[in-house]
Length: 355
Image (cartoon, rainbow, N blue to C red; front, side):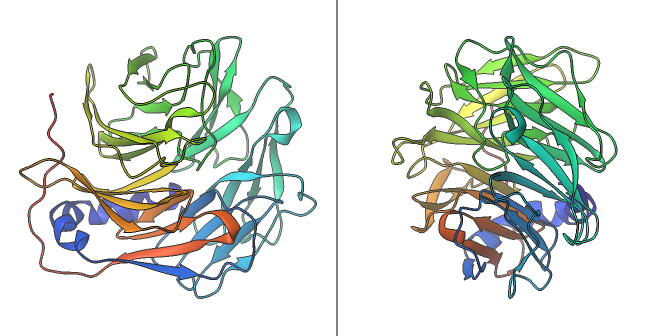
């Protein structure tokens, strides 16, 4: 997410080596959001600053590490469900609402939520916005298929204006994305744009500028209309995929994927304890996934099989991290801050790959 690029680059090397040490001591601190609506959008800027979004036009912001969350909701937007928020800094953010036709919108603030500008309103009754990702001021939005192709919109001015691509990835009949946590689209370190979905197929669509879209099948669960890949969390050119079946919350699935310039590789992972709608990776050896039935950590030792470790039975929908701090959000206004006790760093490795 936009404001975090410099932070993550600065800590990337030390995070890679320190992940196993940090993994032993995660702390999940529940916080008071001041609201009771479901919060499916979360954006971590740094250890003190974060944004959250959800139903009834709700947008929240904290500047003090979550001690206080201030309601900075979009005026006259009670009918909207903001499933994604992307924060640039303490003052600037964009939020995405979901739904058919004009319910799908993007609003932008640059004064900390004191005022909001409508940046985009969907004018196609067949279209449905799902999620966004940013790299600096350039961002991409994934929307459900129209006329056999996923919709990709791009902004180059921080979300002020958006352009619909003519060449979104081809979709199978009854294939679609899930607007579950704002993490169904991602960007790799080498520049690939990646979109995930489910329904008829649990596929990973990826695109490098100057080339064409490619699609990789996964062994992850899929079912019309409720099962597939719900979230992709990238770390460099690797990514964790998580999902399952939101109508059967005890059924989860996961995989690890690597994106090369000309090829990809995919390794199945043990399933987490249930359907997982959001994920964040702190390094190639430590990721956290969240869902309605709890929070799990994926530990990938230098030698041995990656394993899921339960962290909490409290459910959350979305998670985002900045450095070694993360926030999670979910139903009934739940918000939690996830931090790690520091120890001396030790070497870590990515999950075993076939590449």
